[in-house]
Amino acid sequence: MAKSYSPHNGTPWPFFETISAAPAGALSATGIDMGRFMLALLHGGAIDGRRVLSEEGLAAMMAPQITTPAGSMGLVFTERQLGGVRFVGHDGGTMSFFSVLVVSPERGLGVFVCYDGGAALQALSDLFRPLARRYLQAHPADTSPFTAHPGDAAATGGVYQNSRRADSTIARLSALGSELWIMPAGDAKVTIHSAAWPFLVGQSLQEVGELLYRNADGGEIAFEQVSKRVMKVNMGAAQQWQRVPWYLDIRIVGPAVIASVLVSFLTVVSWPIAAIIRRWGGRLWSEDVSARRCHLTARLILILQLAVIVAVCTLFTVATLNPTILSDALDPALVALYACAWLGSLGGLLALWIAWQFWWRRMSGRWARIHHSLIAVSALILAWFFLTWHIAGTTLNY
Image (cartoon, rainbow, N blue to C red; front, side, top):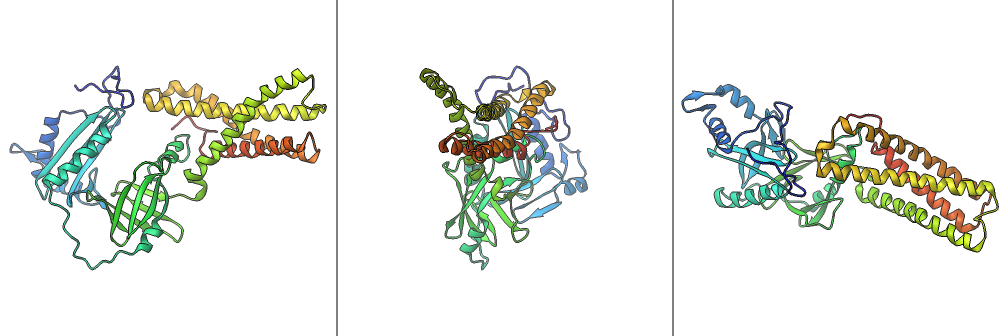
């Protein structure tokens, strides 16, 4: 059996990876056996003179059950375009193995490939592009009278999140980090970038039909106007991306959270430094005991919220490097994280009350009051972040 490797650091896993959920997973097979399986699919469900599937059953599996302008989905099989040729098949992805099986009944052609390790996804992309160019006929020129409209590209612009996501657990953070930014690029073209990393090179697509766009390799995506304010994009039949409102847009959420963390971090770091300087000078921060207590409480709230941010970043980093930690053994750590996040969320309201006290009672100087207003805004933004993305969670299911 192939040894499985971590896709991040290339070290081998100490086990052979299996997926217990059949039939969505649980299959381990050789390339030769998968080749024979494709031959059965291409020959109406029979191989070596023996029938494995009835022709009617196979036809039902391959027939479109859900159809979108960008492709269809049958029972298990999804449709895609490679070099202008229709294929049906299915992808596979685990912690370390990534595979693709596609067949074209019309061409009598099938391809199966499986990679492991960190370069797997890029290797799949690098394989199918030249394969389509060399063995498949180039996409025929469009003979339809369609004329692309630049306004269509402008209407599709925005940030989109995958409909295949968690919305009620802490795993919702993954959807935030994987948002796509679609931008009009002139001449009825759009480009697709990672919204989290917009400086990376994006994919360019040309409009070839009403709200239908095609890339250089023949892959197509199709936009649908669900309502006046709601737009979604179909990337094949198996994936839909939905345009997000501004308050879920990582281009806004990310800078707001980063700025809040920066205010909190600088406040916490400068706190002991300022205390040491005051001690050397032999003076207190304030003669008002109530003001000193508010001052201390605000900083303790920031420390708690920063601890939650650090814990979340650590959890997602470790889980990405080693998904095996996502088990029941993680439950005590999740409970502790949830408890701290809830306290941090309530602390945001307390920080707002403290800032109000500083202004209403005119405690300390103007700069201290402005500073506590910044602390309150930062604490409230982080509290909203904890609640919206269920870092302040209520379930151990994810």
